[in-house]
Image (cartoon, rainbow, N blue to C red; front, side):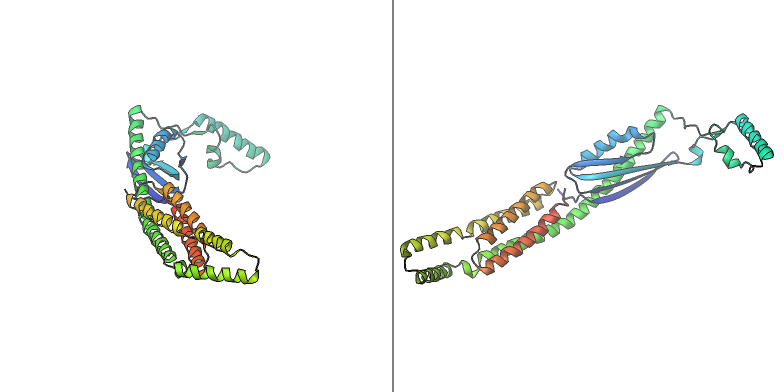
Length: 296
């Protein structure tokens, strides 16, 4: 399965018996599927079907869908003028002009008066409304198919980017594992020097106890366990990215695990070179986690 980003945009247009239909759909990051819907007055009946279509196709994201519907002149109802009422208000306007010298009434002003001009709603049969709804929902399906394609295209780019970060994490893990400071002879020499300095500083120290404590600290500072876990997480990340689908939450958990191991590696390090590797590893993990937030 392909990966999807949670960001994308698509637009679809259609025509149904003189009715122009336009859908615009966009999505951004979200923890679950959330939809804000903007429908023209009279089309609220589509809301449930639109929500179901989004939930069926997507697993995560904040979505916004906007519908625009416009009718051609041939399909619009003709305006009806109340001529008797218009004649009365026109006569009243003329008398006011003659008696008080007010400005002459204009046609657009008279027609804007309530009750003079009526725009009746277009009468539709049940069959006509059902056919229009079918066309509207078909256009919406086209729009969300385009949105899905846009999310997949960005998801493919994210996959390549994330795999690059995983490669970097693996390379840094191997670098830490191969660091000369982890050689037993180097560790032994460093501990022996530290023990010698402590013994020279105080003749009251128990030499055998000091050696035991040094050995314990050396064991505690070993980063073998962290390296093994980092390698396991690298394999898991590659497997998830290869499987595809809605893996954003799983990768986010792995990013937290990567971060935990890199923090522990830095805290247990007893060499500047390993600490530097750990800090670089943390920077790459932060980049990995930031990009993971965009995945479905």
